[in-house]
Image (cartoon, rainbow, N blue to C red; front, side, top):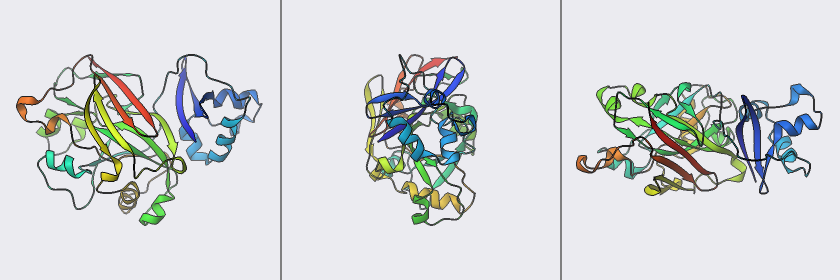
Length: 291
């Protein structure tokens, strides 16, 4: 099994991997082995674009791979997705807590690249609002260009999976018919900490949890999704071309704060630590900071 991630060394983003219990700097390893520069992918995005995963697996498993020493400063698990798409109400219990029926077709909206953030980084909360909410999500990473593909074909278009958090500003989301502004504040979509290739994980049966300051707020399993990852890819591809490196947040389980009765709603605030735990992927952790 291999887990890929992007990490920072000073101002440089490098490609890293966790393999057989070791954390290795793949960028430094390729340089140390004097590989040709044009063949050196420096991010997970480039691994996906160039379809070199088998070579990356072999490189990470080498005994002379360069280890990462000290703390790892993660970058977003995808640095340059063309699209960040999100699915609403994809768990029946979540649809119920939001006061609606389960959707008959996927509800699709988007986030923008300004939302990207990384594991371990702070999330700056806009000072003009207060109803900040969490949504833990499994994220699909597209591996091949696809348009109008069947569910069976869609499986082959997926590169892997990562963790994500769809942070929302609820009062902004609710005051407008379009959700974009309430979903797109800077840094409001951390992805990570790693990407696990689809061959190494069963995305149809993963425990997913969200914790706030160590208290469990969400707990479910991806088997409870209404629309599976492949079904989502197939459906979206009927209307737009998906490209390698695109990301789809597949929806959140029940337990979001907006689903609580008004008298019990306690919104995220300065200093709160939010964790997304997804079985087989790991824990995505971010701290809230008021601007």
